[in-house]
Amino acid sequence: MTKPLRIAIVGAGMGGLAAAAALRRVGIEITVYEQAAQFARIGAGIQIGCNAMKVLRELGLEQRLRAQSFYPRSWNNRDWRTGEVKFDMIFGESAERKFGAPYLLAHRGDLHAALASAVPSECVRLGHKLVGLDETGDGVRLSFANGVTSDADALIGADGVHSLVRDLLFGASPVNFTGRIAYRTTYPAALLDGQGIDDCTKWWGEDRHIVIYYVKPDRSEVYFVTSQPEPDFTIESWSAKGDVRELRAAFEGFHSQVTKVLAACPDVHKWAIVDRHALKRWADRNVTLLGDACHPMTPYMAQGAAMAIEDAAVLSRCLDGVERDGVADAFRRFEATRRERTARVQQTSRTNTWLKEKTDTDWVYAYDAWTVPLAG
Ligand SMILES: Cc1cc2nc3c(=O)[nH]c(=O)nc-3n(C[C@H](O)[C@H](O)[C@H](O)COP(=O)(O)OP(=O)(O)OC[C@H]3O[C@@H](n4cnc5c(N)ncnc54)[C@H](O)[C@@H]3O)c2cc1C
Image (cartoon, rainbow, N blue to C red; front, side, top):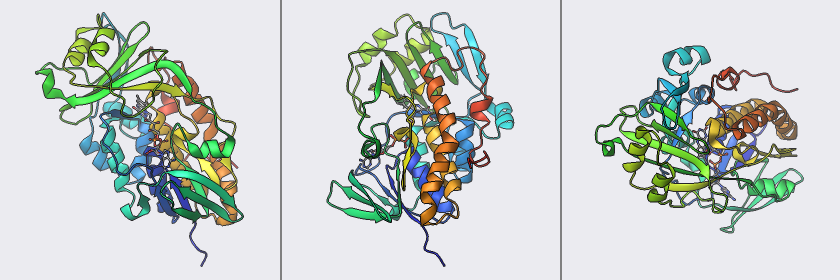
């Protein structure tokens, strides 16, 4: 019997954990290395598109996510001031039937915890920050900041938008700061004092917008995320605090639903919005990138994590039954299968026009990463 492939995954974010769960399904031994000492529950929501839900279903997570997340009737798009509906993208049961899976609105921490539950904890090494990488004749050697070194047959760099694996493979290059920032937070809906809000609405302003939705099935928790110009902002951090007074001022004059949500908001975090143009290559011999490491995008289609999760399913199909000498070719096929779609989503997201008016969404939500033809 041949030995199972041993693959190291750097990064236990959405993409790394999804890849770990998907690769285990096809008998690959995986170890996930994560720089953080523990998983933090960041106050953020995440839209789980029908396309991502198809992958998560096969990973055994559908029931758990349905039980923990909000099931919206639609993603509505309204004018910032008048509230006029520009385009109401209906989800709920009709979209579920059409696209083959539900569209869910989750707490980001719940999605992350669900993915973590699909990977045995003994396969995840926290407190391991990758600092070096050598491609040896028959695999890869990883070095970590804590002094540990480790060998594997292959490596998946799922280390996010500032990927070190990418820098080591293809040379360092800065991300593209869009000149815009996002405020976001979740908080108990009880703070709204009984004032109801729509299920999920993007309020389109002239040079800024805000998306507001519930993230719990009983509407007990609210989330919002904004986008507005701030060309001088430089820090990108999951934990940069924002100033709620500045935020409220920035959305003065918006519809009363927006101003009420902002008035009730206790505190907020702030991010720079960054992306990259499509990379020329994702893989080099027995190392590949996955998720934001190779195709980071603006959040305007709510598809960044969905793309990483789709990557995981396709990569597992490319690696199914492959032995060590076939890994480089499997990584090449993975890249060839995924490149065009992810580049199109990056490009479409950058324009920030998704659902602003009647939009063809089939190409995004109907995609099934388990059945899409693999590149030859
Ligand atoms: C404001 C905002 C809203 C968004 N909303 C949505 C949405 O609604 N729906 C959606 O699908 N997507 C959304 N996204 C995008 C989504 O968050 C990302 O696309 C997704 O998190 C990418 O997953 P990833 O696993 O590739 O990277 P990450 O989730 O960033 O994970 C990377 C992991 O690698 C670890 N790491 C990094 N460097 C090292 C190292 N050297 N050694 C070890 N570990 C390392 C990090 O600690 C991290 O855990 C949003 C993004 C933003 C900014």
